[in-house]
Amino acid sequence: MEKNIEEKTTENISFVSKSEQFIEKNQKAILGVIAAIIVVVLAIFGIKKFVSEPRQQKANEAIFAAEQFFAQGDFKSALYGDSTSNDKYSVGLLQIIDKYGSTKAGKRAKYEAGICFLRLGQYQDALKYLDKYNGKDQLTPVLNEMMKGDAEAEQGNTAAAIKHYEKAAKMDDNSITAPFALFKAGVSYLVLENNAKAVECFKNIKSDYPESAFFAEMDGFIAYAENL
Image (cartoon, rainbow, N blue to C red):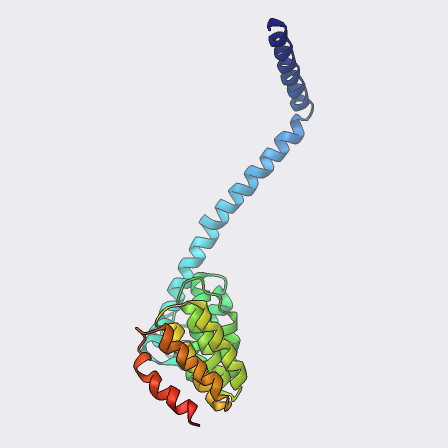
């Protein structure tokens, strides 16, 4: 038993000795690696503290006026800013995207620019900015997908619109956006004279979303689509 303990102790001493020799032999290289890691960590911290956070703040200040116009329904001023204003921050969403596109405010500006172009009837531009938006919250990605469908539908691209509506319906299975997207898909199928698919959409709303605002109207739409 004592022999085994002695052997293990000898092995441990040998291992420690070899480790010390390795560290001593490669000390410069190890210190270099540690220094490099420290530099990277400090650089990341520095970028966030002294570059990213101030940039976020500037973007939030710059977008304020544009979002005020957006909230008021002045979509043209929201997009391009107000050149008559003395406010240095009275710039439009498009300028925010160009200058601060990677910030949270810049990403939000892409979504809002898409809505503005949609409301102004500039559907290709609407699609351009809606395609650039990549929201992480629960609601806006669904609405963004539905608006892509609206932009396609307004241009007569009904089949493309349906793909967006059906995708939106599956993105979040709730009683508000899902039945709304299905309803849009159903109406679009009627445009394509695909009445069976329209009925399917309307019946899905009736069976799956009894709390939806569309529920009470579905019998009428089902009967209409079945009798066309």
